[in-house]
Image (tube, rainbow, N blue to C red; front, side, top):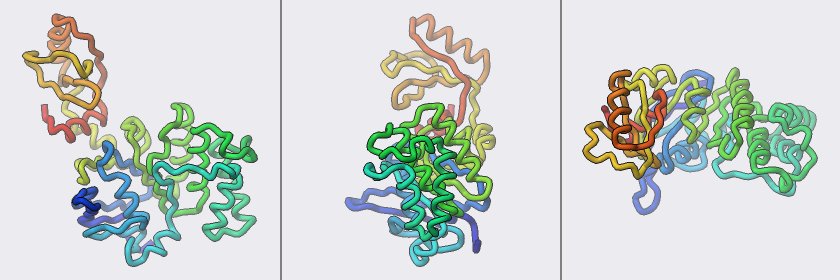
Length: 299
């Protein structure tokens, strides 16, 4: 390997009508493991994946994967990475085994190697029992796992997975987590996710992106250390919090009040109870750091 697993310097991507998807993204990932890229819809996650996997060219800046320039050396990059694109679906007329096997054959693997790796991948994703059933007759979650199996069956140095666990139930999601952890023992797994819990539980490095810019980057422990509040009090989005006397953050589907201590929490809870407002209390997490960065709330 001739450089970091992933390197980006001042990446900018502007789509037609001056839509800025990436706005000066710079990062360097030196070690194998799992990198979780998190952000809201339209933050630039998928565009960054597309640039790093040579599917789209940056407007400005540069990026390398395994020391190869994604524009100049795109063929070398494609040989060394494997991808699960966002909103992809398996060929419905193929069986899971056929889908994985022929994907491996298209990557240049010999028949025997492709057969062996296809079986191993399907067994890891708990799909071997349905290997001969056409994908059209599988559930949406199983189809998603067929895609993951295809990507992870490839002996790649970097795996890019764009929201690989979307649509999976909690049990299936955790089964996929185990497979990703296994893959990360020898490779870099670079995934995007909407699930902050997933990023916090799974990732060695978390990158938070919003409006095309990286707003935070670090290990889950490092980022959790930046959350200055211990408690999160959640109210309905339509709750009347006017003249409440506490700082209120308006998230997408709810209102949030943060408390840094038990005495602060007691004060907030008492004020809400006197108003007759319903609420729930939970410990803060990485999701709260992201909300604070996106909403510009310092508390």
